[in-house]
Structure formats: C-alpha cells, structure tokens
Amino acid sequence: MGADALVAEVTAQAGPAEPSVDAGDRHLRRVARGGAFSLVGAVVSAVLTLAFTVLVTRNLDGADAGIFFAATSAFVIACAVARLGVPTGVVYFLSRLRATHEEHRLRPVVQQAAVAVALLSVLLAVAGIVLAPQLADLLAAGARAPEVVTLVRLLAAFVLVASLNDVAVGVTRGYGTVRPFVLVERITRPLLQLLLAGAALAAGARSPLWLGLAWVAPYAVSAVVLGLWSSRLRRTVERRAGAREHGGWRAEVATFWRFTAPRSVAGVTQMLLQRADILLLAAMRGPAEAAVYTAATRFLVFGQLGGGAISTAVQPKIAALVARDDISGAQKVYRAATVWLVLASWPVYLLSAVFAPQLLTIFGADYARGTSTVIVLSLTMLVATACGAVDVVLMMAGRSSWTMANSLVALAVNLALNLLLIPPLGIFGAALAWSASILVGNLLPLAQLARHLHLHPFGRPGVVAMGLAAGCFGLAPALAALASWTAAAVVAALGACVYTGAVWRHRRLLDLHQFAAVRRRSS
Picture 1 (cartoon, rainbow, N blue to C red):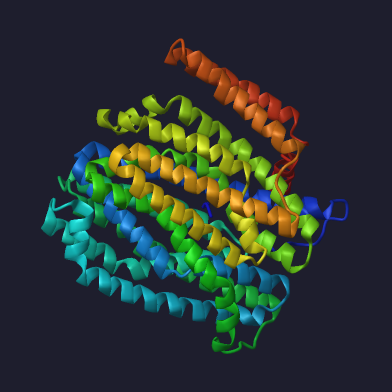
Picture 2: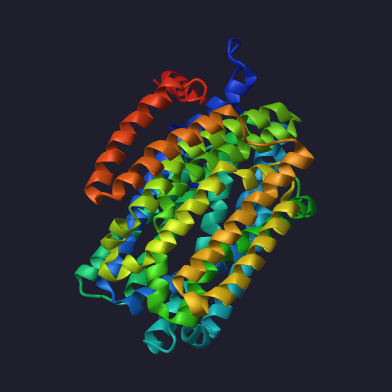
C-alpha cells in the first residue's frame, strides 16, 4: 500500500452526511482519518525495520548479512507470487460491494480467494523445500551451504502462513478499517521480529539461520490475529446490512479473477522490481555487495511512509467513488492525496540525498560505499511521489490489466539494465536500473490516467508543496554542506522551522484543514 493511516478508520461507508460540508471534503476527511492512523503505524514499522537491519549489519559480517537479505528477499518474492494479487482484489471488491449494498456477496468473494492462495502457497512451499540446495547455492555462492539450505527450507515452510496473513490484511481493509493493519501488521509483527532477533543475538546465535527464524516466526502470530479480526468484521458488516443469504463462492470466481489475475502479475512484477536486484547482486557480485545495497535502500522506507499511509486510505475510497461514477470526487481525492504525499515524502528524500554518507555509518564503516545508491534513488523518488498514488488510482478505477502491462514494462527495463550494469558497476549499476524502472512505472500510468480517464494530480497546491520542500530541505542544506556537515545540519533544522510555518500558512490551499476537522470530530 503502507502500510502503508491517521486516527481511526478509512471507511467507504461513512456515517450520515454533514449538511454544511461539501461531498468532496467529506471524502478527503475520511482519507485523512485513515491516512493519519496508518502514518503513525508506518513510522513505527519503519523505525523497527531499520533497527532490525542495523542489528543484522552490526552483528553479522558482510557475507552473512547478504545471505540473510537475499534469502528473505526470495521469501518475499515467493509470497508475492502465492498471494495472486488477492489483497488488492479483496480491497477493491469488498469496497465496491459495500458501496453498492451487496453485502451478501462478501463472504463468497473472500472464501474463493483464500482457497486459491492456500493451494498455490502449498505448491511453492513444497518446491522451495525440494529445491533448497540449488537455491542456497544461488543465494550464498557456496558459503555456509548446509545452514543456508536449512534457512531456505525454514522460509519455504512459512510461505502459506505469510500469504494468508496478507490476504487477511486485504480483507480487513476491504471491510473499511485500517486499524488491524496498523496495529498488527505495522506494529506488532515488526516489534516481535526485533525482540526475537535481539534475544537470538543475546544468546549468541549470530547466524543467518537464527535471525531468519526470528524474522519469519512472527508471521504466524500476525496471521492468526488478523484472521480472527477479519471474521469478526465480516459478521459485523453482514449484521448491520441484514445480509443473511450467501451465494456459492463459485459464482464469484469469474468476476473476481477478471480483475485480480492481472493484478497478480502486477504484484509479482512490483515485488521483483523491489527485490530482484538484491538476488542478482548476490549471484553476480557476492552476498557482501547485496548487504551494502540492501542497507542503502532501507532509507527509502522512510520516504515511502507517507505514500504507504495515503495509498492505504485512498484505495477503498477511490474504488467506491468510481463505482458511483463520481469522477470529480475521485479527482479531488487524488490531487489532495498527492499534495499530502509530497509534503510528507519530499523532505525525507531530499535530506537522505544530502546526508547520505553520514546516514550510512549507522550500519557500519563498510556501508558508506552505498552513498551513490542513496542519492540516485532519493532523487528518483521525488519524481515518483510527484505523480501521487498513480498506480493505485488506475487500479481502483478498474484498469488492473493496464497496471499489469505497466509493471511488466518496468520489470523488463529493470532486469535488462541490471544484467547490463551490475557486472561493471555493482551496487551503483543496480541503483541506476531501479531508478529507470521507477520512472517508467510511474510515468506510464500517469499518462494513461490523463489521457483516458482525465485524471491527474497536478495543480497550484502541488507546485507550492514541491517548492517549499525543495527550498527548505534540498537547496539550502546542500549549499551549506559545501562548508561543513554541521552547517548543513543547522540549515536543515532552520529549514524545518520555515517549512512548518509556510505549510501552516497555506494549510487551506494544501487541504490540511481536513486533518484539523478530523481531530475535532474525534475529540
């Protein structure tokens, strides 16, 4: 998403209309409410994830850290294949069914989707267990062979659990709440991972295998809790709607998979875009290179906090608005959400680019050579965030086949450039390849939305937001860094003060008053 929300719930089925409030403003308040709570969870998740990465890089040597990152990347890709795009599919369908008062179809949609994910997950788990020796050779280049084989088999055994966990996340969001996603997926699971990793290291278990167990075991807890929570939400929604008759789940298969099958391909390609370069680096340049690259790209997580939170809130709202043919409402939500995304993300990406050498030292002295990777990807993400949650909007408008085609094009660019650039350039080549694919993956759907649906995120508020961020966190600190890093830090702190004041002054232009309305309503 984020995973990507800001106080209580995003709900496509809002309460009674407020007579004095414009309909578009009501939509924005609901997105703001969901986005705010999700953002809190995203910040906590990012901090916990970074702390886990620091534990790995500080307690394992470069090769062992690379083995861990490569193995967990392979696991994440396997889960992306196994979940078949279902989390997004259930968000789309459950949101639409609730918006059109067809609550009797909710249970069959979820049932047939979960069965499909479970079957494919079991097949992938068996394949991973059987092919573990070959996969271990690819991931670790012959290092720690027996232990890596065990690690691969351990991770394979959890593919089913992790995939059903992701389905449950989608179901809870489709029922109109981000609370389970934030509390369980964003906070509880990463916290358990960090605590178990710390316990393993304290006990002297300093190896990729034990850290892999600490990382994957919390998925079982998360899956159980989210599964129970989603069942309770379903019963509540059905009871309120008076839905007593449930059709057979077979009747939902064709409709659901016409939308979700393309999304399945898109989901796998997007995960390959995020993780394939780590696997290729491990195979072509060794696991130590993969470790440096993984650590360097961890800072992107903080810039993506706003995007994940806002996307989580926007998905069901856009789906519901398009289902009602309210294109003007969708446009207003899309533009405002893009402004909020720029306000939240650009300062992080700009500061990451300026202070890249200093930030990387938290992982260890050897990781400073990832500076160019941080700079290239941070600047690329400025363009990506200026496009807003473009892929989400296109997908929730029902164009899942377009998102599939776009992601395939981006993946082709990524893989071709990785194969071409990694051998001579190493991690910098991987960064250039990912940067190119990010641009393709955002500019293509942006053009499609503008041409075919007449939606785009641009306007005066967006220009103001970008200008404020670029001046306060980009240009001024970069110039000060020519003198010293201390001067750059002082200027960045002053820039934050100026930025806060300017954003407050233009809060109505930037639609930030919607958050104040949420606070008043919740108090």
